[in-house]
Length: 145
Length: 186
Image (cartoon, rainbow over all chains, first blue to last red; front, side):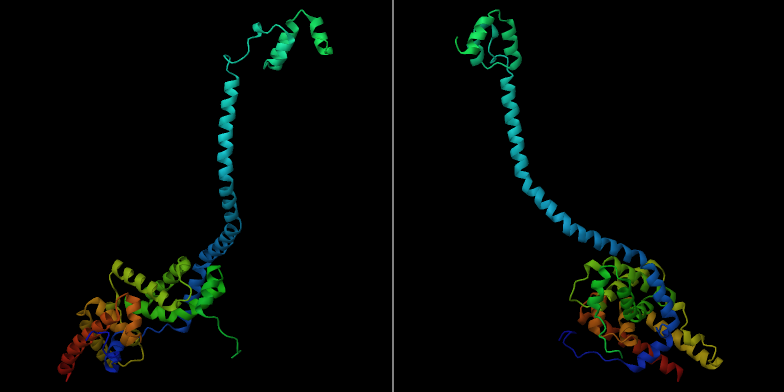
């Protein structure tokens, strides 16, 4: 039979009396109790203030932090897509800037070729101002060329 | 009686979690006496017992978020008291055996009576000192403070059966010692 299975132990008044006589009572007098309560209350001021601050902070966290995190999670795929798009765009731009693929101005002799060619505005102006054939330009503008 | 129901410990703990000083004060009022008794039995003097109670309440406040709603505050708090009390006892030499109980220091006691009591106290202290520390704690909490074996088990974080075994051993040894004392004094 284990100790748990045995009958509940009962107090021994004789033993209790001897022990109490030897070791005294643990009664806390009313005055001491009041003093102790006051001491505990004073020392608890700061921790309680922290709890008041903490509960306000955590409430704000619950109210504002979670939606913010959810919104950021929703934006993540968009950010990735934007990044890929930027990479592709800059890649295309760099290919457009590739001088090898640019049309050679020397090979363009007419305004029609200049219009068809993928010239920048600056290149086009340079081509036009460098041209001595103003009549051809006017005729072309008038639709008679 | 004003008829208004006193809030339970659980409700007070919820308020304390929000920093409610009044609720904390009510918990202190309710649990100081028992905590002090445990502290006194573990540490053996009033000053240390009072310090222990104060520290235990502050420790409880610091970890109030770990208190599980629905459980009883008393046993949870008493475990804090006992753990801190045992640590304090380890950290410093125990002064209990050198302290004379208040009633032995009473100015009202006759010199003869006081001498008899002092002799008895010395002999009981001697018998108690022969017991292992754990058995002394169990005996004091059971015989002097009225805790049940189950309550002591919860406080000391051991099984109820182990508490009963310690209690049985302590009583047997103490009775034997005090029986010898009775024979010698007659």
